[in-house]
Length: 337
Image (cartoon, rainbow, N blue to C red; front, top):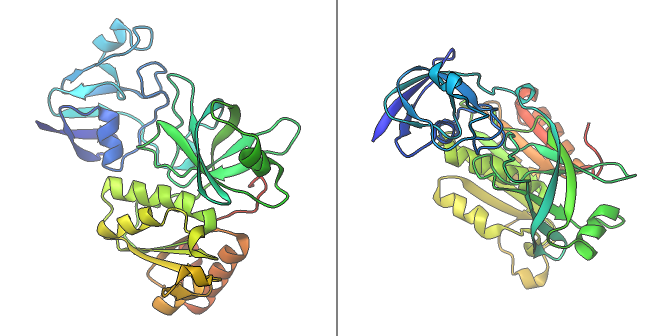
């Protein structure tokens, strides 16, 4: 059975199935409510039912008291609808609305996707979740060393584990540790979420995604989020690398094509074994060949600084892209400001 939910004071309206929690349905339809644990423990998602009836679900009595329930309060991460609802709640509309936390995590899994790319899955403590916007990053905190910044490669709706894509950088102390010393169940500490690289959902402009190397990680998160909430804007993803094996999740990118997202891989230094017949050269040049006029587009670019800077200079200088429609995250292999 499907009910309607209205959020007050915004007036946002979305459908909710009887088996869904309020938080699940809100995220699915593109509305982000405050949350943390997603398990009825922390109380961050507490809000008021102005009209309608809910099943409060499983929660800790100390987090949602009998008096609070009598006053119409509920926990959106646990509550499910029993009728149409009108809910009083604060919505997360910007980075400033999301608390930055310092937390421990455990290395759940390590998967080598290329000779120099490791995909980490990080598990948070029980009853903890990190609220973030797709595309943001975290700082790994290392004693007596500067933090190391890595983009989150998972979308917010898929937050059981935090996913990082780590390239083994020559001379990189932490990346060397990841590839040569780190093992599953190791404990790390991080701070986040951080950064302003995230999908602007209030726009209707077509989107050009441009990634180089592991710049794929935040683009992956944004695309998965866009697909999850049903974004209908035209989207075209360009992924640049040196050789074919550097496109370390090529199958995933190809799967997005079936969902309507155009995909163009570009290799700058293909080797004979690649038998490459696709686009070659610099990835941002391939974008320019296809979109000489970007005046009505938005661009999300991520990867090596030289790629991001070249894209910004050429797109705005030669293709008519408005500066305010260029969103970027350059990997400098140092803490981001």
